[in-house]
Length: 518
Image 1: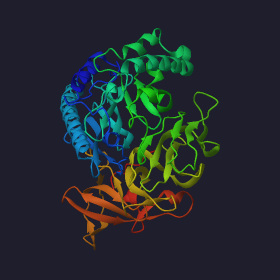
Image 2: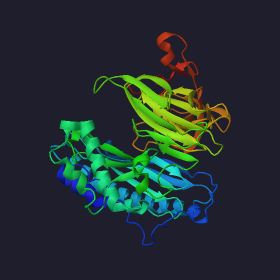
Image 3: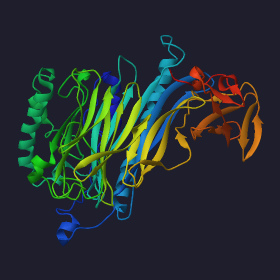
Image 4: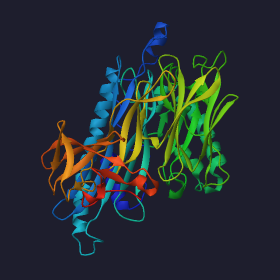
């Protein structure tokens, strides 16, 4: 079943879950090499890590004349760059291009359904919204593999939407998509050991919450056409079970990691752990074994990131542990993502974020040095959500309240002192094609165009596309298709600190509405 067929089944079946693993592109006829090039030569190949970049794109079906927002779609486009990674760059580009084409065709089809239902006498409100979200998260990127976790989420009416996760892994040398057996020395023995391990872990973590016969469901993942649903991360081979596969929808997606340490004898060298430089996702509460060359002194160390809560839902402290060294990030509503970053200069870092509540994130940077953890930086309001972590550049998200409420992206590098250094002057605000964040002036608006002060007339339609978050907003004039800047100041007393002023006048007096959240 391809991704397009899967989506059609979803719509017909209502809230049924997306089958795990659907939509993986078939691998090419050429098989990956049995041994990596460096193993054949007996020499360790010195090579920089590949850079995995992810660009967010939007598609909207919005009728200006009827003010109906029929469909909103967001999808990620991954790209790989770096010397020596031309093959995998092309492999990822080809896979992503085919996937985007399917998504665009599906969006047009769903927009048609939404238009029909919006025109129905039984339609609720003056618009009918469908949505499609396709998110890609980096899982591991080094000289051996590019591994990613893809989320397919759709809402087409009903009590809740449907979603499913899919793992996809490329060989960094050949650029081919890897099947599980491609990275194993003995797939039969691995299968038996993994089934036993996964079954035990599921029982430990979920117990009576599992469906009756979940053991058979674990065995069956090896017999279905698309095979197991998996990806590689910092700790091991992580298997995905989507909603309804082993538990109810309320259980959500379930992950079980088969650790490299326990299953190393079944995994080909190179695939069984990160190389000396690269990035990889750290699964929560899973132990990551670090080699001696990871700035840990003479002995290997074990790394673990987890949150400790007394109840199933509730705040709790987030911890990072490295051997006998531990750091408490703070008390949060939930832990977000965590990554191990091993730079080419030999330094290693843990990058993680945690959420106080309602997207109120904090991002932490810890350096792993001499067997201890050292907190190097802490950025309030910044998260790894929608971003990427690379050895050269980290792209992080920040929530901004500047002439409206926006989600923005900023590139950072890690400085010599381990702190995050902002790489650009302006935060990039994600585009909006629906008109929901369009600003329409109700009076003359002071702006700067091409370095000269001027005014935009009443009735001008514009978007905010960037800001330095200090006093300058970048605008795009939708009427003239030109760009400029708005200079602003913030209030400095009490509740007035939330007010933004343009030429001494509150911003809300310049526009019909301002899209502030909350």
